[in-house]
Image 1 (spheres, rainbow, N blue to C red):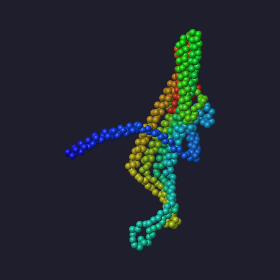
Image 2: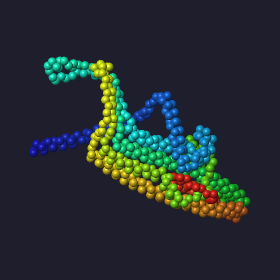
Image 3: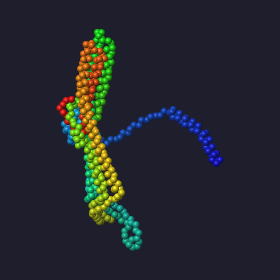
Image 4: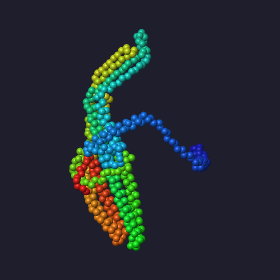
Amino acid sequence: MKKILKVVLICSILSLSTTPTFAKGWFKKDKNQDEKKEKIEIIKPEKEKTNLKHEIKKIKYNVQSQKESSKEAEGMYETKFPAINSKIEYSQMNGEVTLVDCIKLAITHHPAIMSAISNAEIYKTMVGQAWSNYFPTLSAGVSYSRNDMLMTMSGSYARMMSQKYNMYYMPTLSANMLLFDFGKTKSMADSAKKTYEASRFDAETSIELVIYNVKVAYYNLVFAEIQKAVYEDTVKDFELQLKQAKAQYDIGRKAKIDVTTAEYNLGNAKVNLIKAKNTLELAAAELANAVGIPELENVVLKDKLNSKAYDVNFQDLLKTAEGSRPALLAAKKLMDAAELDIRSAKRAFSPDLSAFGSYNQGGRQIDSDYGYQFGVQLNYTALNVMLLKKQVEQAKAAYKKAVADYEQQRQNVYLEVKSAYISLLNSHDSIDVSKLALQQAKERQYQAFRRYQVGLGDAIEFKDAENSYLNAQLDYYSNLLNYNINAAELERVVGAPIKESDVDL
């Protein structure tokens, strides 16, 4: 025990004596590192050599693929919506576009649509892959070997056999073909077909979402142009007020504060105009992004906000959505595919009936002999009853989930159609109120301007009337914008166009 205590005491003394040395060295090292100046070296990226022929080939392939996908997307769009009568191409644009032009450009250029179409093509190939089980499997080969046999027998019989010899197989051909598998391949192919059809509806969903985004961006750009024009008119009105305030101040009819107030109002109006111009530029960029062509910014819009009322009925819209909404139809196809997966899992218990055949030529000499065989066989491949049973249970659970997902999607469709329908009605009613308010604000602004012109009104009255008129204009056009956007939203959630009436808003 005494020896152990001595060892512990010695170790503690050594540690205490060495700690200051290490700390001193450590701080000294930190000080030296702070004094040193680190050199920052910029690593230049390595220049990769490009294969010009390969790049040209890739560009041609991408252009051809885009044309095929664009044609497919137009076909999907025109199955439920009116045919696109625009013949515009981005290379032939003259700076003026309509809403239909932007929709055409989006369908033919937007990468999200190209991706959705390509994804559907991937699932389409899986249908053929499932049916490929019924196609023959071919194999061919040529081989040579040098053999030295291990002889376990002795005597004269062993000496008579040649232990070292060549062996040729020139050529070796074989084929196997599935004749019947009691519906396993058909179930897998049917399930793959349902999944492919669901992916087609997913592609339609992507197309309709892109078209909705284009409409929203187009309408926002139209509203941004209107907003800029409203602020320009406001600036002109305040400039005219400032001239009148200075003129009346010069003749002594108005105080200096009227001039100062007019200058302040004009400054605020110019600031709002600058913000409106920035908003216009941002809206143009958002339209270009929604179309899928970033360079599509400096364009002139031909169409204005729609001012026709829509003739809609909720029950008719809901019935149309249940038969046209791509997301709901995709969920239905996935549910059908899950049901077919149960059948496919159950039929995995059945055997396979297949045919086989082969032909060999060769031997110890290249053309010394030949042989062939063919036949039919019925067999189970790696039959594991426990595994197959659990796979059936998994397929049943997946089907239950697909049923629940379909019901959830159906309820979502009801909610989205109801919400979009109510929003459309609210914006429709708001337009009538804001239109009346605009007329009243315009009349008040005119009266305030005339009163100030003849010296009866003051700058505060004119400012209030001008701001009221400005807000009334923006409120009216904002409600008209919301009405157009809500109509586009209703078309998206229904999955079909809604009818316009002849009634003006």
